Length: 446
Image: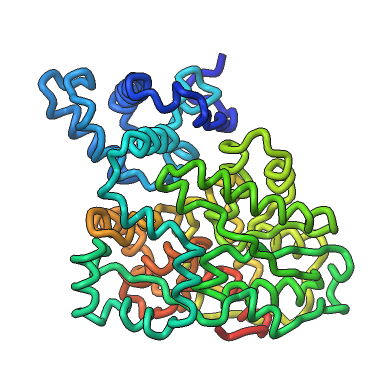
């Protein structure tokens, strides 16, 4: 039996969402009370996010200062504050599996949202559900990208005020920009060939899973990743069969996650069979492909195969550079870099690869922030929770302001945007770590 303080790695259990017991309100309530009672007695996670202070205050102010004194509908604010960052599961909780208590707080919050949706009690989350339709929304926005970007700009106060009252998107939240030319289109229009003088030439092939954000909102990240890998001698191909489903996971729309996983994995397996590694360009999507899909679709062989062949972009670059060597000509960036280790990168249990990669750049100061930014996808933009996201992120903002480096980067593009928008460092453009590598090699300036 595993005891508290064990050095065993945390293990995730299958999300048994098709089992009728999973959606049984009474069984959910029983499990919520069991877990909340353990959390209340431990309190180790008090400073991770707003879920735990809300839970502890709720119990401490109850009639008998225990979970049994609470009504079930009082649990909703605790669930609302969870961003599914996984940091309580990965870094703090001493009771995660294989401990016999079997705590998985984020997936319990996911189950609560699933049950609420089944019961039709989530009409107020309509905006979040629509924001989760990434491919649809981005396809509609592309042809009119300049107009959409003008309307959504935070400085466009009249339009943002109307948007807040109609859609519930907080007027103070910075929203991603759209591009008329996607990463997939840019790759097709600007072909590249691997550097035949690089040590890794002819040894590896990488299929860059574009991700919805990079494809539609941040093509520069994809172009930088492609440039760096080709410079290292790696043959690349861009692939985007569709969204990984992370936005649907946040809303507990697990049937939609399964549908996206089935569709996307079926296409990516074809590339794996051609000898390509799958390389994800954002941390959340890497987490989905490596871990979350397999918990939701445990019997899908394509999902399993993709999980076994997927790398995070930083992880992949570090592996290539350490095993195969580095081309000459990398230049220092004396202005330095503040690198935020995104929660969904940390949850992949691969080590701080962004920092490890950037520290390979000579004579370049690299400061690391290892704490949640507070954004959490739609959590960071809608009116009920935007302020909470800013509150959770304040320690990160303070650290970035103190460091005052020339670049602020994160494996999570929304986290990077959130940090830049709430700091006074002089940095105006959030970046991905791979964009810094492209700068160091002199490959790109965007």
